[in-house]
Image (cartoon, rainbow, N blue to C red; front, top):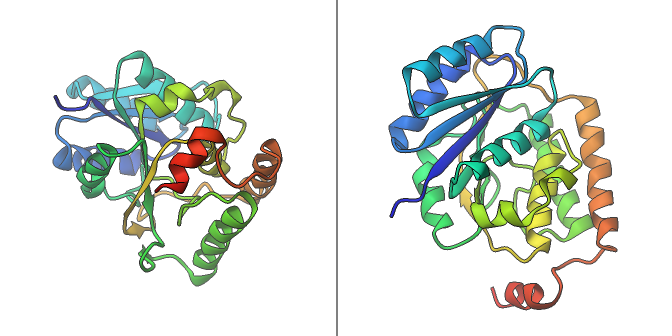
Length: 251
């Protein structure tokens, strides 16, 4: 039986991108459903999404009343998907930087694990159209996360992911504190510390062609301090406890 799959895509001022990304997702995963979580975009993204949902029963929309941020959008999407019985829940950007052609690879890896991360840096660097300084910041951030927390993944800040239902059900989603890009680190770290198996699949990351980046200095600061808070939360322990630790050691 095919797993019931939901692709969650947060949006804020992504009017130019939502049509192409939904078409691309359904080209490579025709049976997948898409949930757009719009943060009250002033550019009319929400209205366009309503029209898309009315025309395609595989597309759904959640509307926020204000700009609540990336983390809150995903939490809302996870809860919506769990309530409706989805087995696999993806995180994906609206801007095309996450290639929907990789969805079948994620699905194959998810059949053998619990959480699948798309990696830009394992077995080489696969990033297109980023300035050198942003690439170096991203790579340094990954090394910093691994150094402080011990999280054994090559791209802990990446946002292209596939969660199995059992992982999300085991996490207290209301206790997740991050709201910017540190949300990606906190979710993966929480799953790892609970002993869930994390797989990685190589992806090519291409910077957005339309719209604008939502990255800011405040989001970067949040991520820096969140890494230290995560380590402190577990008293700087660098692997899961008990049975979970034994499982990880055997991998």
